[in-house]
Image 1: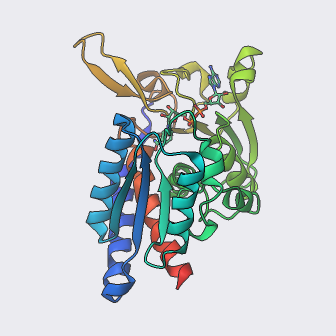
Image 2 (image 1 turned 180 degrees about the vertical axis):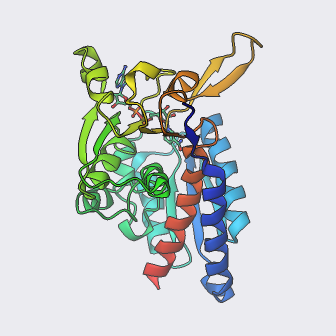
Image 3 (image 1 turned 135 degrees about the horizontal axis):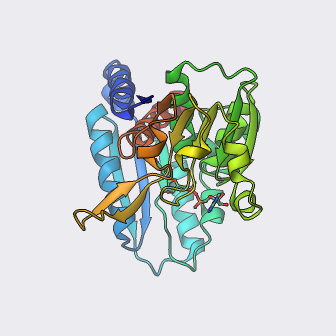
Length: 289
Ligand code: NAD
C-alpha cells in the first residue's frame, strides 16, 4: 500500500488567497501590519524573516523587521515591545528566535500584548489553548490542526499520539485535539528512554511527530492505514549525492508503505506554518478594530 500524500503547498495557497481577498476589501489605512523583532544577527532568524516578508508581500500585509544590536538589555527590549504594543499601526508582533543568552525570551514574549501576539507565545494565549481556542495558538500548532482538518479524519474517539511535547507544537496540538474528543497521548524523550515509544505509536490512528530526530519513526512503528503528520525539519547529508537535504522525523520511504495519509518533508507542514502566521495577523487586526 502506498499512502496518500497530504501536501501543504495547495492548502497554504488557499489560505493565502482567502487572506488576500479579505485584505483587498479593507481601506488602505486598515491594512494589517506585522512587526518582527530581531536581536543580533542570526542566519536562521534572518532567513526566517526573509520568508515572513515574502509571505506578507504576497497577501498585502505590511511587514517591518526591527533590528536591535545584540548588546541590547532585556529591560530595553521589553521597553521596545511596550512601544510596539501601544502603536495602533502595529497589529502583530513576533520575536525572532534565537535571542542572545543574556535575554530571557520567555520574559520578553510575556510582554507582547496578547491581542498582538500572532505567534501564540504569550502565556495568556497559550492558556486559552486549554479552552480550545485555536486562533491564539502557536502558528505551527495551528498548521498541524489545519492539516488534520483537511484529511477529514474523524477525531471523535480516535487514538491520537503526539510525539514531542514542546510549547510551540506538541503541547498545544495535543490540547487542541483533546478538545475534539480524540483520545490523546503525548510521548517525549522519557517515553523513548523507557522503551515505550513504539508501543504508543503503533496504536495511533493519527500520529503527529515533532521531535527533531531524523527518521525516529520507522515504518514498523506506524499502524497500517494511519494518518501521519511529520513536523520535523532536519538537515542531513544525502549518502548518494553527499549534499545536504531536508528530512522529517519519520522515515518517509518506509512510512509511506504503511500509512494511509502522510505529509512529506519538505512540503507538508512547512508551507502551512507561515500561512497561519498571516492568518493570525489578519485576525489580530480584525480583533483590534
Ligand atoms: P523541541 O526541540 O522544543 O522539543 C523536542 C521534543 O522532542 C521534546 O518533547 C523531547 O522530549 C522530544 N524528543 C527528543 N528526542 C526524542 C526521542 N528520541 N524520542 C521521543 N521524543 C523525543 O521541539 P520543537 O521546537 O517542537 O521542534 C520539533 C521539530 O519540529 C524540529 O525538527 C523543528 O525543526 C520542527 N519544527 C517545524 C516547524 C514547521 O513549521 N514545520 C515549526 C517548528 C518546529
